Amino acid sequence: MNVIQAFDYEQMSRLAAAYIIKQVRLNPSIVLGLATGGTPEGTYRQLIRDHKEFGTSYQKVKSINLDEYVGLSPHHPNSFRQFMNEHLFNHLDIQKEQTQLPDGKASDFIQECKRYDILIERSGGIDLQLLGIGENGHIGFNEPGTSFQTKTHIVNLTESTRKANARFFENLSSVPEQALTMGIQSILQSKRILLLASGNHKAEAIMKLINGKVDEGFPASTLNLHNDVTLIADQAALSLVDRGKGAEHGR
Ligand code: PGA
Image 1 (cartoon, rainbow, N blue to C red):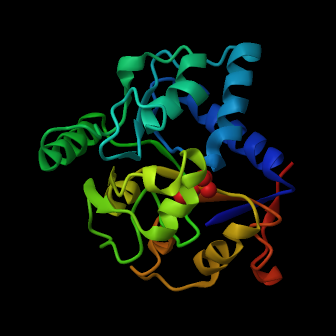
Image 2 (image 1 turned 30 degrees about the vertical axis):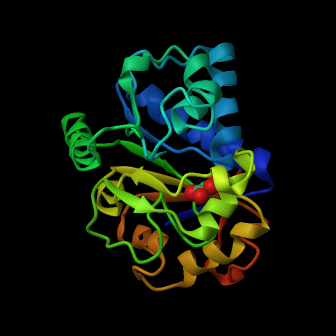
């Protein structure tokens, strides 16, 4: 794993955006795997700024998001579809029909998961997957204990995940209890992975990821099995990592 240390959230976001922009410019038809949450918001702001100032085009880009809440329609203000529209898609020249998320209101979730797997396969696979990490080590909504063999599936969200996401909702009880998520196997099949982490509350997860063994009890540890992972994390998120592990400093 290539580890890049940023000073703070802003620098992490700028470095992450620069990484993504480089890949989009190298391959204008790139398939991006995208994530929601507080972590990528700043990166998306930087992508928008670059698009407006320097004209990086997303006209041929396809995107496939990691997950969506069960029970929320694409128009629900807290759906991940709305998050992506507001924080990214509405401000780029990407074609909306080329942007994909699981359907949280599907009538048959087993079929919906199959549809999503086929969609990933038909896209030719994800070229660059952007990931955040949960405090409990989840990636996407793959909670601790998820088999590394999983493809898209329905999950019961843990209490800690629901609490962490409650800040986006009116209260904890309005946070959905289930979600559809790309599986760990699907994530690992991405050609490149860019993992972002910021803040003290992520420090323990990042320490476990870098120092720890590969273990289904800590989903992010599966990233140690992939040969092209870049972690961009700020000082706070790297604060518990042994100095000897030597993160490169971002510029
Ligand atoms: P966050 O969530 O970006 O809102 O911290 C990350 C995650 O839970 O994967």
